[in-house]
Length: 398
Image 1 (tube, one colour):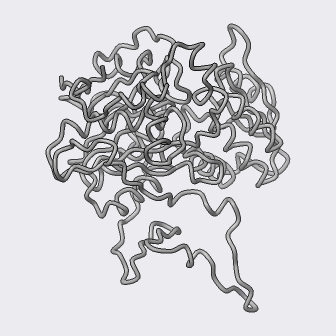
Image 2 (image 1 turned 45 degrees about the vertical axis):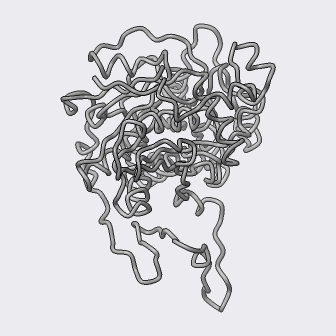
């Protein structure tokens, strides 16, 4: 049963993004054509035509893959829970539409660009990245675009599809062995090789800064400022910290809710300030056994623990009801968002992220053999019987 735990004194734990001196971009007025400027990017409200322009000599200018990061659409998921109070909506931001098929494209672009601007990364260097999979795939993709060699280190938990995609981009993939910490391996490699650049996604504040400057403003603009709740799982903590930091800056009443797989230490840390003991869980790319430097727990207003089975069954519900094919972290986010939405009176707009594409998990979440091996029931009967409008999973506030 999922429960929502709220924080009556949010503001005492974790590093503050504001300490980095990041200033939120100005939210500009919508122009008559319905488009909104955010930094040097545009959100097109009704067409992508303006991504193409006529350049010098009358040649049409077309975007490259790297230009397509961000500005993903918001999808209405409210129909998944028909018994919500009138005026309550649940929206999912389709981050699987990024060129690397996940929201991690945003942070790798930010980290590499900042390192280049500061002279820490330059031609001839090798980029090394520890990742549960998606950041590694994004890093391998961006390095192929920018001409860097890339080494990605992951754990045996990473799906075969994500491992194969990392190799397809030309990166070297290393999988940690028993007793090895893949995150520490990244640090050790960078220390031993002066011409290697460490991405350090768990502590690099260019990670939350990417979401502070892009994802947060996009959500605020796309909801026309009506967003009331942002629900997001954490791993590095960059997304919830960056988006949450921006939304609270421009609209302090927005509630930031941390979706957390059962077994992760984040829930206990939120409740008690103590790390506690982590327990194995199956959802990839979210939850943790430690507290990363990018996670700003002070902006989190509540926590929603989600069991593996609930996350995976939501993946099937999204695919079979909405035609949305996503990974386990997205299923976890949507399940948590609906749990939050069921506690609300309208009007309210609950936004979450659809983090990555389901194709990355064909050998796991979408494999009957893997589900059976791990004791997860995602049969048609169980998915059909998982009524998201039922009060049996209603959250409880602390």
